[in-house]
Amino acid sequence: MSNSVIKNEGPRRPLKEKIVQIYEAFFRGEDPSLDNINFWDEFFLLRPNLYFLESQFEAMTYEEISSLKETINNLFYQCVRILKDGNQIRSMNALQTLCALVHGVYGKAPGDYGFDVINLLIGFSSAEHLMQTLIERLSRILCNEYPSNLKSLVLKFLLILVTATENVSQNTLLEYLMMNSAFEAIIQLLNDTKSRQYHGYDAVLLLTILVNYRKHEAANPYIVKLSIIDNEMSLNGFGQVVSLSLSDFNRKFCEEELEPHYNFWSSVTTFCQVDASGSSVSPSPSEPVDMINSSPSKVENELPPSNLLVTFLEFSSIIMLNTKDESNVNTCKLCFIILTCITEDQYANSIIHDVNLVYKVQLHRMPMRHRKVCHDRNGSFQPLACPMLDLMVEFILSHMTKSLPFELYYLCLGVIHRILCYQKKGRVRLQYQWKELWTALITLIKFLMTQEALLAKNCNIFNLSIQVMNTLNLFITFGDTFLPSPSCYDELYYEIVRMNHVFDNLYSLTLRYTTCDGEWKEFAARLMNSLVNVRAIINHFTPKIESVLADNGLSALTEDQVLDVVRSNYDTLTLKLYDNLDQYEKYTEKPIESAFFTPLVRSIITEYRTSLNFKSLEMQRIMKEFSTIS
Image 1 (cartoon, one colour):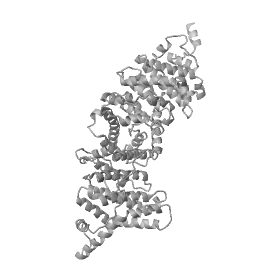
Image 2 (cartoon, rainbow, N blue to C red):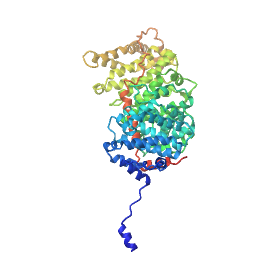
Image 3 (cartoon, rainbow, N blue to C red):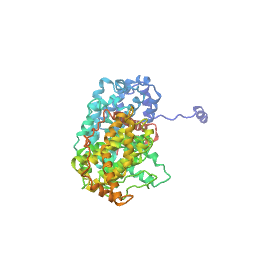
Image 4 (cartoon, rainbow, N blue to C red):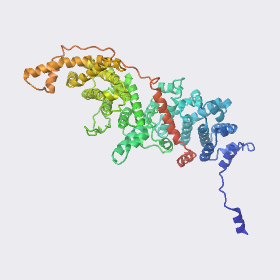
């Protein structure tokens, strides 16, 4: 009899979690709290099943989700209410539920992400008050003595909120974060070492996205507050988070260099797909999740003391190694823009030129046919302006290809020009191997002429050449005020005379383009004008050198002999004084670079959104850990 009963029952269906049964009631539009006054207090003691919630939202259309507006509004309200009661387990579970609600609703929302989404998620009539309460409560958790996991979950929720749309400026919900700023709560997480190790990356990433919200359309309080912050601990903490990410990337690159069979380019590419943030850099896509839940990082304690700019220069040299990849090109451009801003700042310039602040910087160089790979591991201690110039010289010499990255070259030359302008105005005599820079500039001119037929079809090689010549003219006209010694100035003239054929060919090129109508005629004429001093030097010293050769029956002169000729014939040389050689257009993001930063921020958001899969085993593990108070 017993066996017969067992057979008739058939296979036993797996029991559903209580939380899943409640979710199913929600998605049927039911309200299980009607007959139970303690329902919500009990509900938030149950561990959320984010896998189920994610699956349910994915299976529904936006219209079906819209029909559950009252249920979703009520659930959002109850989550916010529970955050006020102080119970940490309930707060954990409420925050996880909020994560799933925001992620689920935005995942199905139409593209405008306007008031309709706010109405569906919160209810428009109560949204302002409810969001104010929510942000105040989240800020209180971040600022006070709460478990690290709870603070991490607050940051996770805020990141889900700010990355809910690929274009951050379309996320109207962020208006409430503008009206009720959480800046102070976020930035104070960077003040002490332990908090920074647990929360630093997410805090910096969150601020990076928030400062990009409609920054050119209206006043953004996060931009204002970040620009005027004077808390040294917060500023140092911010810098240490960025430095740690860069150092970690540099360290991994160096380790991978020792593994010849490892394709390190893939790691560079992966890293750089989300690098800029404002912090300039972020780790691989999975790392934002992992860093939240890891124990305090040992890396920060193990790394030797260093300067953020030292680490950044090494990072930039690594990124420069592969500019065939679009993401690396974008990262390289971001690095050059950062260097542009640094070299425009008077105080920053004084620091990088300070002979009492010297550092050893390891720059990674591209393997080339005419030289062995050198990593500068045994380089000398120098002011930071020296390795910065080394980096620019290295870029010039290693990226002369038929697909010349013109924009990067303009930025590179701009950094050099700004450094020279500071030196000229302040009469700062930097001890540097200037000959390497002059050689690089002349080599670039030679390359542009060699590839003129190919490059001139699509790009303005004349404007780039003008920028090179303006730099050389700055040395020629004002070099005696900032070059370290008179002999260095002599060497400049020697290099110009020695490479006279390059400038003669460049002049012939400008003649060809100025004598016929074409789109480059005006630029060619300007380039011809910039050659006046170089041609004057060549035409002045060449006959003097030839005269010495003839008088002494020699076929060639040594470098020292040529330098003697140069030194003894300055008096009769006439040069043209160009206007505004030491002037440059100040960097502004809008309108020139807006088209660059908008997709860059979007790529950061997309990368983060990709990592947010509540159905993944990794995310389930992480959220389970969040439910444990520690």
